[in-house]
Image 1 (cartoon, rainbow, N blue to C red):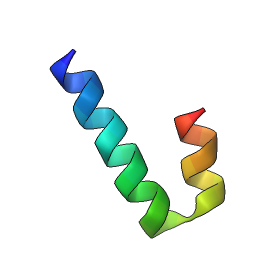
Image 2 (cartoon, helix red, strand yellow):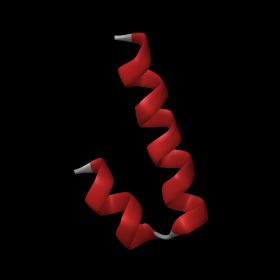
Image 3 (cartoon, rainbow, N blue to C red):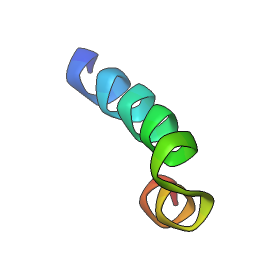
Image 4 (tube, rainbow, N blue to C red):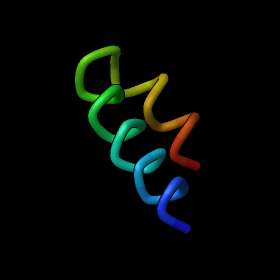
Length: 28
């Protein structure tokens, strides 16, 4: 569960850095 939360944070942070398209695809 802890790893999942960290992954979500990393994805959200990466989405803003890498781009909205990549972040959106990974988040959903």
